[in-house]
Length: 328
Ligand SMILES: Nc1nc2c(ncn2[C@@H]2O[C@H](COP(=O)(O)OP(=O)(O)OP(=O)(O)O)[C@@H](O)[C@H]2O)c(=O)[nH]1
Ligand SMILES: [Mg+2]
Image (cartoon, rainbow, N blue to C red; front, side, top):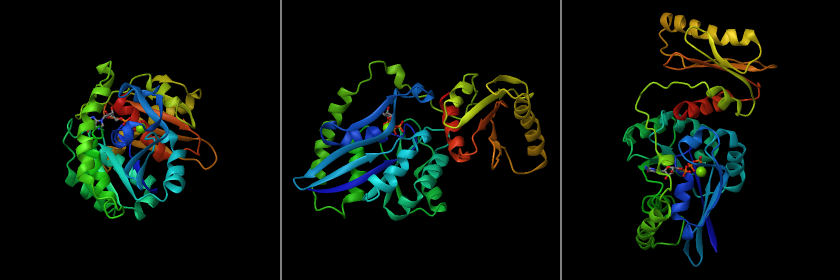
């Protein structure tokens, strides 16, 4: 049997697990799903903690092994393991992006950077999911962003729940690399399977699948964001302040650090006025020896300060906070 590998990457909830489940043999994939105990759970009941695996048999002597990454940055150790080891010899990458997230282009850039080495030497198709719920950004915007990043990838809208939508992407990535050529037959069977899958996966409690579509409204941080942030690896404390710099809630013991977080909100307003750099989203004080302090500002003029170990990457922290802000 000749095996070909494909790797599915992309942000939380983009549909990596769903896509692998939809096309693998008998939908018998291996998932390492955990009940999403954090804010992800408000959007979907489970999240991948290690990896997804499924096998798609093409013929008696060829099969495709489908690997999926966890989307959450706190399971990042698996990204390396998949990209440099388990799926380093993959035939291509399916890069899924969720069109309903607040900043899909930011997601695209973030995961493109994290998987840059693999992306530079493999064919990539960007599959934009949930376009039935939100049709912007357009494919052209994705194409332009990819071009700016110097990434040569095709972009398609896909529905990760449906084999009939995922299979053409698999075909596009593999057609030159496999002997198998009965894709049309496979697609026909897939359409039949889609109906089966829909029956199988009707959620019992439909409300848990409800999607809060972000359409540019203001994001308001809840007090509980402090507890949520404390679950991030390497975070030692968090403080939420109002636009006057008064602490609303904090898990940071040092009064000076709390004051500093509040102080930043005032300074940033002045900074935005005198510079023409536009809106400041975060300010980070990085230390070579001690903890870092990062202050995130949002449109509601609340301020979230995070004290974290200097080993925590700012980019990973920012991505996690972004995840919280759109689901919190
Ligand atoms: N409406 C709609 N829902 C979709 C589409 N694609 C996927 N979904 C849903 O989006 C959710 C995706 O969840 P998962 O497949 O667990 O996402 P994931 O990328 O594996 O997420 P993590 O493992 O947490 O990183 C599921 O509830 C799917 O049913 C789409 O095109 N439209
Ligand atoms: Mg998953």
